[in-house]
Image 1 (cartoon, rainbow, N blue to C red):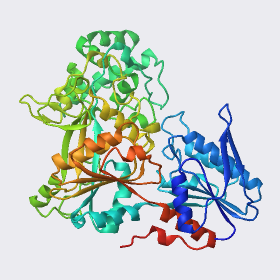
Image 2: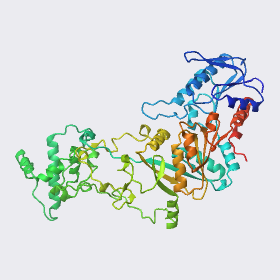
Image 3: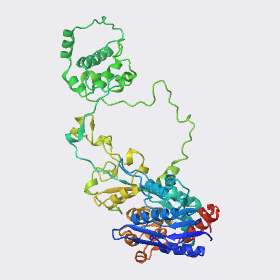
Image 4: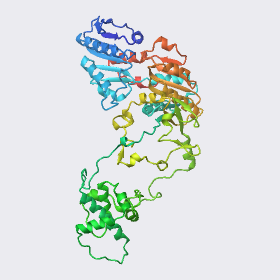
Length: 572
């Protein structure tokens, strides 16, 4: 190709050599060095004027140095009057930081995209972004290539019974990637999810807080007048007495009471009723008067004062006698709305119990302790021996726990809201939003490593007597991969497991852990992320696919202005 310069960064020189060999050229000369204080120095040693420049720099174990080196090379080519500058980044650094994980977190992927735009990049070519919506961070076109055609080609050529295979996602976040592969190969798919079991916190008065109550007019009722509260309590008593009167009885017209009569009536009130109603907030005491009869107008014209009726909070007898059973009554429909019968609602009933049984068989649960499947009889760790999800029953059975079986601690009865409540706990998801905003992979791996934390794993999909292909974009830690593999084999009854990903980072000893897992047949990745030869020799299960052909064709088509749509298609 004429008027093309392909420069290699220090991250992945072998990949650049393979790309240029396919294109029939050599890497353009560039001088890369560091000063004694660690600064990076770049010198372009060939003319780039009116040339299409392609800088191949992937993320590696020295990510920060790779990023700075790439930015300097882009700016140097811009200063050399290059026609266009394309950054070829097989693995985009900081791609996993594409959203805020906490309130004071940084969107580092967007910051890197802005730095590249300032340096002078005109185009970006990458492979399998961790979040495809990260393309919106860039101010230039982005070609997000996929490694799915390479992985599917290896699958069809090396797995004899691949037509019976099931593609499984090891977490809900990778569902879209799994369904794409399943649709391309016309295969079934499944999902594996893990849920960390929560332990009880320590209850005490230090964990409780009294919040402000809402008044009848909708404002904060911080200092309710004493007379206002007393009048509301008197109307509760009068309401109960009027309801118990016979239908033919009509008492004398009530005259305005004096202060002396008011105090006398208050003195005749049972002490148990005073103890019961004393725990109510002033706003709740006010709402209790809305059920009063006798033609008396409500104390406040606000619609909020009519939101709760007397019969929906307690019976007349419980209010009169001071009983403690003041539970809310549940109604099937609102007043004035007729409930439609199941025969007229327009929905068809299930064909029979067989369909329900088939769906139930496709959902399998298990227990994970220290990242491995354990038997149901194994006792729970110390941190999750009392779980909010499951607990051993009186006869040893495991199942859901009803809220009626557990008595609330005294500390929670002393206030209107406790920090032990879910309303006062920190949100499990990032920024209180969906699970998509959390560092789900890192938190999941940390939970699987902790021997004192038990997780519940759920497999959705039928994998019995079938090979399973677990797919994700990155293999970094091995915990979630091993947990998913053991789940589909030991619980689901799968025959063998293949782990596939585009980027094989293999942090810590993850590759050795994957090699020791008997359920995993092979680990298949591409060389988009540089894998040293020493790491490749650690296991015979590792299979590394070459992406140089994909990137070389993308560079060629980009230079000649051709479409790259064919690079996303599957070929036999």
